[in-house]
Image 1 (cartoon, one colour):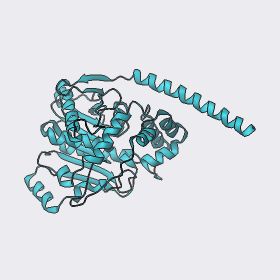
Image 2: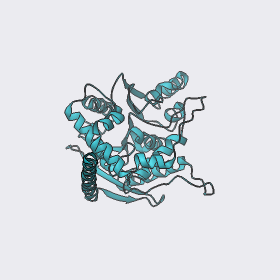
Image 3: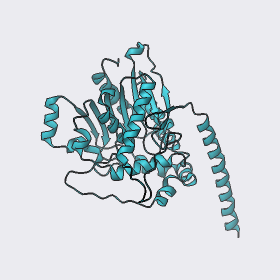
Image 4: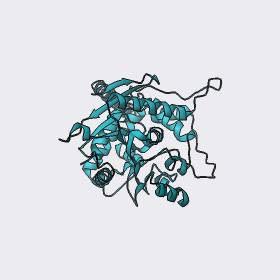
Length: 352
């Protein structure tokens, strides 16, 4: 009886804390300094946040970065990561990708008698909506930063609108890659399992608030180099996954893209449509990139890579660390330096 009473009392305290936390989180979301843009050609609404470049450079010379957030995030998490990893000289546009927070949801077809809408077309529509947002902001060209699963849309934008992309940065990309000549099948869990694991507010809240260390371990891996400051930043990034319910439709779209929109390395990186310079940052011990995602450019045939270098259409700068957490958040200063040096070399006309 005493044990049961103690357990019940503890459960009540947890539920009360959960309700209070979620009330505060949703209140903060309402006060988020985000803007909305409606793409007339696609009908998609795009929620976004921005930060002006902290520089005295003339407006025409300012550099802007489009930051595409990881799976489960949103414009709030994208801006947080952008401010963390990018030089202060860069302006930041951080949209919520489709289905995240207030950006329009794009649902994959659920019934066989519905007209099929391939995931590729959904990504194309997102890319078009983002380009119209750049037009609205009068940004002729941006450097795109794809973080984790945000790299899927980053590559799609770079392929479809090469003239709008000055350079591309991929940090721990999780993208729908397959080895040429191999028929790889990924596990496809029922949607209720995904909903429980990734779209349930209480489950996600417990992972973030009560089992913080285990959640950080599963998302970022472990590293002896992670200090308390870096761990606090990782925790802030994880907390930006709440509320899960408002972000779950976007997660489903990401999941569908990874499951079905799978291309070879040549199709991803060496297509003629992609003409900009690419910085590829990853770790060999990344716990979220175990399907050989972390060395994609090198998997392309040497003949194809040589032809591309001779045509000078694209050069990939690879920085593959022997160890490190997902999105390399165990070495934030090192990632900052790598990105800044890449920008200085490849965006010299707009970056000082």
